[in-house]
Length: 235
Image: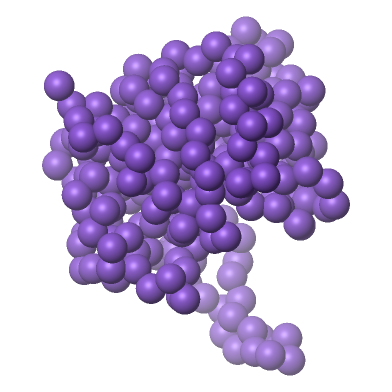
């Protein structure tokens, strides 16, 4: 019987969020961002295993932190690398042989809706080797030069903001990482797949799958959590 695993690179420092603990270990409404993310991923009935790639110096702490929580899927922790790409590669090689669909999810997207996770898995299982959730761009986009002078206004109709989890057939993701240039790391795994010439399917993302990067993002995320609690929809 085949399984689905989610890899969660969580070894980054998150310096734009300000000084302190690694970003994934910062708290959101009293709970570490990483715990929120793993809870949301594990809540999908399509997910069997979640593998967290944690900072090597925080392995024991992260293992204990996740061990205190009850999840709806198996959860394990491995040592991450210096880059996101390296962390994903390290988590990928630990997967059991029966995993055939692999998702990669940013730990900094703690409020991803369960239905979005399930939709990505379903699309990969439907025959698409790489699937990414995206949002349409609503702002006007300007291209500027090194002096911050506008070169042109970019047509936003064909542009998308990419979210996670991104989904892959295991074979495609493994080949993408085998072919990857460690000195030219991509910002997402779909970029590695694109470089192979494999088609990447876009499906609808969700506004609540926002990425926590700056302090204001925490304010927005806590407002979403408060609304979920008030409506009784908190995962």
